[in-house]
Amino acid sequence: MGGAGEGIQRIVLGVLRVLEVLKVLRILGVLAGALIFGLWGAYGLWSAIPTLMLFFRDGSPGVAAVSFGIPSPELLLFIAAVVVNPLLASWAKRSGGTPKRLHRLQFWMLVGALALFLGGVATMTTRPGPWTDVLLAAGGLVMNAQYLEAAALLGTYAIKES
Image (cartoon, rainbow, N blue to C red; front, side, top):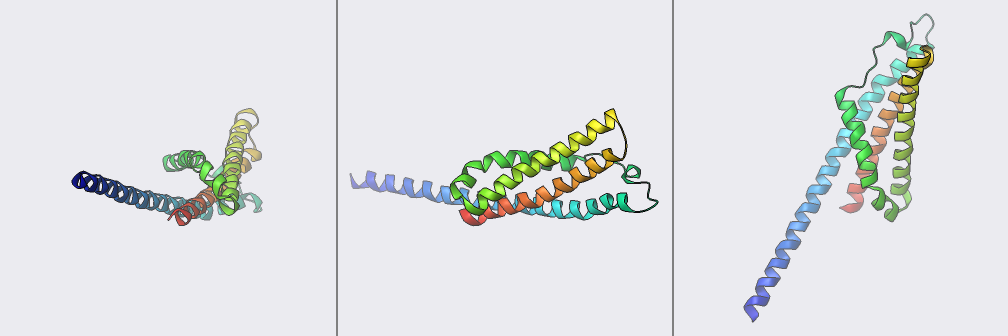
């Protein structure tokens, strides 16, 4: 009977090792996501601020002179941010404190960016003018700031769960 008990013990230890490896892989994936969100957000903010500043320069044709559109990586990152938020909701609530605040902030930044973009599209179709450009540029600014915030949230998750 001792042989069967040892066999079960080996199986349990093997399963525990696999679970530890999976946890490490999950944390590495989260850190990779944080790095991608952070780099993209920093680059996006770096390029969005001068675009928004075009409005406030004298004699500038305004942001209307700049072509707007949501490139594929931006759309995919936005979708990833929307997916990440509910996935981390229960963890953020359990953790409380900073993770909970970061999670709530990310949610409202996503809502704000979407509202600004939709407002820009609505003004573009109903009454095109300078507000269209301001809303779209501000939406891009909030979106890229949200990517930095998502990177902070994912980094916090990886640190707390490791």
